[in-house]
Structure formats: structure tokens, C-alpha cells
Length: 620
Image (tube, rainbow, N blue to C red; front, side):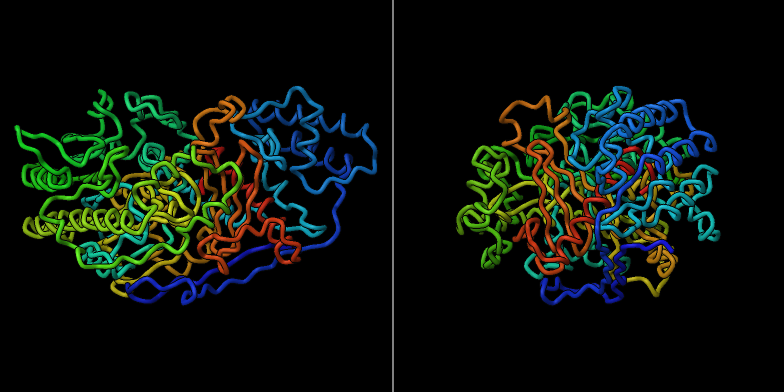
């Protein structure tokens, strides 16, 4: 019998309401972390496995070379002391790699427990899926069979909704895409901010409070959105505004908006595009483009206009001038609630909004203390970019109140545009034929841990709003809160499926509509954790000596009960027990408690598997 370590969480069936405090929220979880003595992997056993793999499996030339190199390494390992104890497959293959010059790997940072021969293992992961954790076998490949089934279905050019939604034609699409909008900046979850139109979308549709980004930074997350793949796959890792998306590893024609346009949609983009001028490739994606970048105010026809106001004007113009005999897809891309970096004030709403929240007292962030800042790992110091931007925004009560109120004002302005667009859809008679989505590129820290901005895998940075109002959604599911992990890689497949367009096989995400069309089955097979990545676009070995002080790279395994961080430039690990420490205040990596050590063993093994599995482009 194969023993597994798994965590299952029931979806929330309650209606949209106010944010519960961490102590009020209880997550039904069951854990089975296994323990015991270390297991010795012998050369004979693994050599037999490798011979079987090489003889009976059809593999690519590259995988064959990796396996041969691994075999060579294992031959060298055989000459080592036979009493050598190796804890798991990854440790053995790591040792083998040290003895085989033929094993080369990606330029991404290495973890002490991982190997550079990812392709060899994960081309044949079913044979390596059971890792030893304290002498017992645990399955770290949870949900892979179901995911592989979905991948095979895509390759046959059949989408999920073609099976589940025979009676509906392709939907129009309006995507409201905000900027730096953390989960708490939503009225449905926070009584201190007013977003009535987005809240109404949640009541008419579904709210996903465990929606997360796989990389929390603007340009990388936006590339992940349009491609449907992880950053390690699309390789848009550097800040290069003049070439963004021009050097994708995924063909541009196979990304979201070119696919919509190719299949007959009239497509539009209004608002922020993370490049100063769109290249010729953009014409393959959009029929209409009104793009502005990185400022709260713009000049148009000699007048100083707020960009959120321009968002609304341009969105309405698109809807009113579109061909009436075509399906349409519109992305309304807001700059709010992004700060205008290195300016004072950092947040600049419209003048008429300044009276909003004027008399409110916004609660201070619990972890916005000097002690929490000091409790961060040693490489966080005053050179850190998040700390630099924190000073002047959230470092004093007065600065915090002023800036958070301006941020909330900008959010309410965005909400007004959402309402105007919805009213126009109703006026045109296409409201009930349009998929509405509200989401964002990444979250933001508003003083948590003594920091501002994003990048890191703390809750405020990676958990972002997702509201979907789908006219096909069953009445029994409308107004519900769904607590499954949805990801930024899921958005493109979800939109293409609603448009009746086959999902390209390279896309790693899943159609979120599963969660409201077949909630019971989807909950059983849906992901229970995911891999998070943030890299600066260079091998960490090549980064300047002090570069990691500014915005250090980090990878993580995210679950609802535990979180595991790995900071590769300094080889630092962290472990948080989220269900008991929702604000991530206590790193328990060095705890001697048996339960914690069992969790750490499992999280390391699962991290190793998902990191390689996700970064190799597999469906997640």
C-alpha cells in the first residue's frame, strides 16, 4: 500500500461577507506526516530502475542523455562506502550528479536538497514519486494523474467547457485588471474600503479569496497571465520595458489575446501595458489599443487627466464603437492601486475623491512594528527596496493613515469605472452574454513586516482578489466564496474556455469554471498547494555580492497550513505554520517539535518535486 501525506480542505459554501479574522476562520484539514528512520537507497535498486526506464520507456534524446549521465554518476556512487545513508531520491541523485560531468542543469539557483537532473527524474516521475520521509514513504506527486488527464484532453483540442457547456455559445469577455491590489482592498472582505460594484459582481458570481500569483511582481505576473505558464517557462525575468514580451519562449501567437483575435474576437486594451510603446506583435493581439504607463496623471488633448478616468472613457469608447456582429474581449488595465514610485505623495487619487475616508481611522497593521522588521532574516536591512519604499509611506501613524486612505480612494475610483462599464453592457443588451473578471497582477505590503511593495511570498503579497461573474454559472453557486487555490496561470485557460477556443497545450493552468460547474469533483482533484517563484533574472551565482540585499530572490511551497521559503542567494530556509500563525510572525524551522520536523521533511520533499515539475512546464 502506498502511504500518502495529504491535506484536504472543504470549500466554503457561505455567501460573500466581511473578512473574518484569522482566529475566527477555521480550516478543516487532515494531516498525515510520516516519520521513522532513514531509508538507504542501494545502487543495485536504482540501477535496476534506471535500466528498466532506459529499456522500456520511450524517451527523448535529451532525457536519454540525462539518464545515461545519471547512470554514470551512480556507477561512481557505487564505489563509495556502502554504508552511506541517503535520505531520499533527490539526495542520491544529487550525490550522483557530483560524480558525473555529463549532468548539467538550468541556471536557476540550486537548493541543498535538489539535483540538476530535473528532466531525467520528471520525464519519468511516476517511478520516482515516492520519497522517503523519516523512513516512511510519502507521495509528493498529489493530483498529478488528474492534471495529466487534463493535459491530454487539451492536446486533443477539447476544452472542459465544450463538454460541460453544450448549450452556450462563446462569451464576450471583459477583464478588469488592477495593479498592486492586495486581498484586503476589497469591500466584500474589508468593511473599511468601499467597492460596491465589484462586491456586486461577487454576489452575482463567485469570490476566490485564495487566488494567488505565482510570481508577485508586475511584468513577470503579466507575462504569466497572457501565456498561462510559470516565469521559469516564459523567461520574462528582467526589467526591460522596451522589449517586454518580445522575447517570450512561448510563441506570441499562442498567448491569450492573439488567440482570441485569431478566433474572430474584436479585442481591445485600455490602460497600463508594461512597455512604453507596443511593438508590431501587439497588432496580432488587439484591434484597439489605448495605452498609458506608470503615472497617476496623463496629459490628453492638453488637459491633465487621471489615468483611472481615462480607463473609463476609453473602455466605454471601445464598447460603443465595436462591431455589433462580433464577439469582443476587452482588458481594462488600471494603474491603481500602484504607487507612483519615488514620488510624494506615492498615491494620488482624483481631487474629488479626497473627501472619501476623511473621517475614518484605518486599523494599523499588526505586523507593522520595528520588532517584526528586526525579526526578518539577517539579509533584510535598510538597503532592501521594500524597506526603502516603506519609509515615508507606512512608517508612522500619520504616513500610514494618509497613504492607505489615498490608496482606498483610488480603489473606489476603479470600482466606479467597473460600474460604468457594467451599465454600458446592460444598455447594449450583452450583459448576460459577457464573462466578467476582476483581478490584479500581484498583491502588496502596506507596512506588514516593516515593508512596502511585493516580491516575497507573504500572504499580503501573493493572495489577490479574483471575482468571476459568469452567465453560465449555476444559480446554486452564485454568491459563494470558494476557498480553493486558484492561480494566475489559470486565467488564460479560463477565458479561452469560455470563448470556446481550445486551450493551447503549453498552458499550465486549469479552467476555473470547473469549480462552479462541478464543485464536488473539482474540489477532490483541485490543487492543495503550489510552487511560488521570484528570481531576479540572473543565476544567483552571477549576482553582485550585495545585490541580494535589494530584492532577494525567493522560492516557496505554499499550502493553507504550512509555508516553506527558500532564499537561494543566501541558502536560508524558513517554515511557517500558517493555520496557527496567519501573519507569518514565527519561523519554526528550528523547532524540535516532532510535528514540525515531520512537516519540514514533507515540505522539503514536496517543494523539490513541485519546483521542478512546475518549472519544466508541466500542468499544475
